[in-house]
Image (cartoon, rainbow, N blue to C red; front, side, top):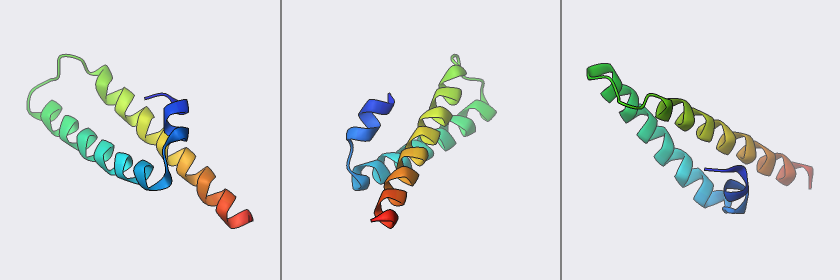
Length: 67
């Protein structure tokens, strides 16, 4: 997911996507612990996506507070 797509989402959609992404990451990590994933770069990509979403959510919250 690219930053432009994340910025176009509403705050509610972003929070829902964040929860979904966190659950998917946890599931990936659990599956990887049991049997190695074929493409381990998916874990790194998921972590980066979650970080992007958190950063943009923080920006949104800071804009609300400054108004």
